[in-house]
Image 1 (cartoon, rainbow, N blue to C red):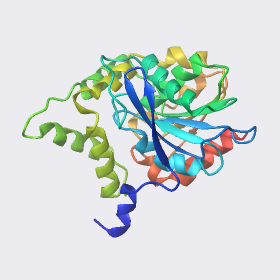
Image 2: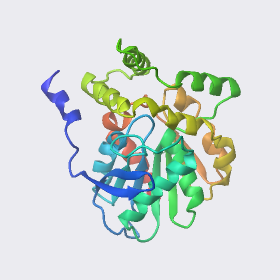
Image 3: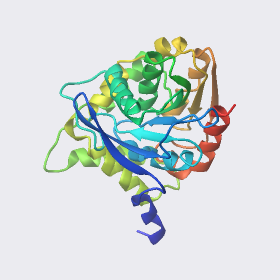
Length: 278
């Protein structure tokens, strides 16, 4: 491992960590610049993909936290958040992230950012809190056909743990097949390690996501919404999502989704700032 690659295993500048009490135990979050927002610096709350954690949002929190309060929570069962007692639905995950938001005590409106599974949680949160959530950014909002959904369910079925570590080889191969190039091995290893922290019930995140059809929820959004479409299969399936939102727009990005926020932080943040400050 080259010395400069070690930066991906170190905390991003200014990002602090904390816990709040949730319905199924403690909920973990990362934040920067936390305090009351202003008319020109509306707080931004970020929700990660699954399986992963708010570590996938750390670069974004660090960069966006320079100009506005910014935070990202670990969805229950991922990262350092305690696991739920039974398989949750997206609305349950949204409630948990709402608990973190309430604990931040942000006065006035906020904006939300979601990544893949986090996009569906962000949409549910926006529908549940229309007066609080001002604008929405979705990094990936895939629309599946019935056949594609069946294939996704099969891909993310529960892992079978064995001493031969075959479940680890499965995930390593799956991530490598969709890895961008170049992709620092240390960053790949960090994401891989974070995925494993979800344990044998980490598939609950995808199970909940696959129970929600964005074709039904996106048209109900009243907030201005930006869909960022990446160059991977999930991003390609997201191209038509913005057309379903009354105030939707989209941007196509020539990058793969995994590791995107660490590798293309400046460009992603420029799209986000332009949309939020419009």
